[in-house]
Length: 358
Image 1: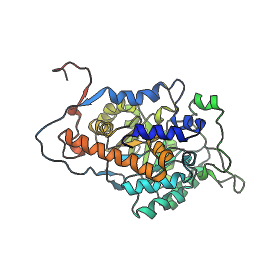
Image 2 (image 1 turned 30 degrees about the horizontal axis):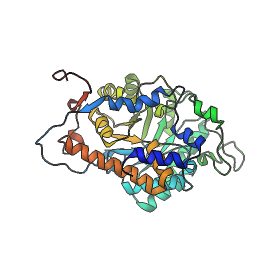
Image 3 (image 1 turned 90 degrees about the vertical axis):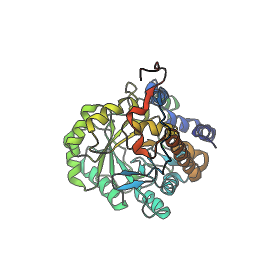
Image 4 (image 1 turned 90 degrees about the horizontal axis):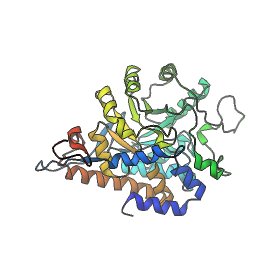
């Protein structure tokens, strides 16, 4: 496989149609889903020349150093894509030397995911995606499980007060996981019968809920799903440790803009005080470079990891990450950049703009 598109095609051949649609689909008419990729295609990089060589592209993220500015975004139900599921993803991500954000809706418990990562690299960084729940005791239990598993941060998804309207899933009647699979992090929670798996609640949140979470843990807390600059400003005021600029892969709100379009304004508001991450539509190493040039510290991939997993298990995920690393390093060299810090906003232009009006 020489591109993520080829891995996507192989994954589609191997997945059951309803499972492919679950992974690939977006909200409503899937405008946001398509725009996530199209928005990158409207941008271009202005290369510099005669600036010397490049070095490998490690970046600092909360609590860890990643060997490249690419991380794995949280996606649910990896055992739908491959029998080994999340542990295969964790091993591949650890081998690549970057961060895995494990989904709260994983089909393997967080302790087993981190154990798989640490078996590959004892210093592997695994973060836990968290949806705050209506009962504080449930939220606190999930936080303790993440802490006990050795997770390095909590990534609180804040763009889901309700479930997005996933019309592909409705057409397919895909409402439950197959027998033998469940959201394992939701098993044996307070108030539930022994062995029971509770549903994940989507509930409206407030900044007070975030403050209560900060009182439960000393782990770094990042907010995922921020698109408005005013919310980015409030996030900094409330002491978060990072922001993931994201529209949930186009799966929640079809009227939302592409994250890369709003990233520059959020970067201006944040002013470098905390790391900015981005996901949504990243399919090439050049997309990663564009995100960094517009203010991100790193860019995440979700669906491409699932395509790699479905196509070839752990080896497929590793191939996704190494393809992105290779492409990003090539982009650095072609831009005349010696490292990620040299990717600056003046290198970004819009395709079709008349020369001299950049």
